[in-house]
Structures are given as C-alpha cells and as structure tokens.
Length: 137
Image (cartoon, rainbow, N blue to C red; front, side):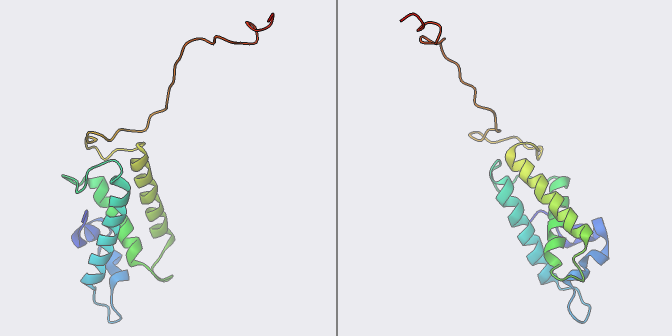
C-alpha cells in the first residue's frame, strides 16, 4: 500500500476518517484498510504500464494520490461524499492517466523495454512517379 491511516490523518485530520465510522461512531480499521488497498490497486493499474511493480519506493506525491482515492473509496453515501472529495479523486485519476501516458513522471527511472510515447517518423527516397514526371507519357 502506498499510504496508511496515519498518512490520512496527517494530511486531512481525523475528520477524514469519518466515512469509515460505524453506526456507533467508532472508526473501523477494516474499512480504512480496504479503501487503502483499493486505492493502491487503482494506482498499480495505471503505473504498471510504465513501471515494474512493486515500486522500490513511493514518492510523497504517490502517497497523496493514494490518500485522495482512499478517502473517495470510504465515502459511499451522499452525506459523506462531498464535491471536494470528488474533485480530489478526479484530479488523482487524471494525474495517474498522465503518468501512464508518459506526460507525468513518478521520478523513477523507466525500466528497460518500456519507453515513453513518441511520434512515429518515417523517411524514404524521393518519388519516382509523380504527376509532373508522368505528364508527357
């Protein structure tokens, strides 16, 4: 996993764990763990295109992305799913798409055999037959 419960509270405070609370108000660690695993799985599905998994190290940016996706995963109901949580999740997924397309970087070297997207350029000799050269035939 790219983040922990303490990472969530460090970034957004204890209130960010409210969606993982049971009916009696106690925070359910199983729900948090499930959301963090789901978020890490989403991350792996995007970055696995460019990088060998598991990553040797997770950057701070990747931890933040995992937190934003996990908080979204923990917020299934309309009372906990705010516009801010939705926009953070949307931004996190957009960044992951950029990483998988090669427009953003994790700051890790790209392993051998995996290259960034580049345009295809072809060259060849000059035309033998053209309208101009075939005009008098």
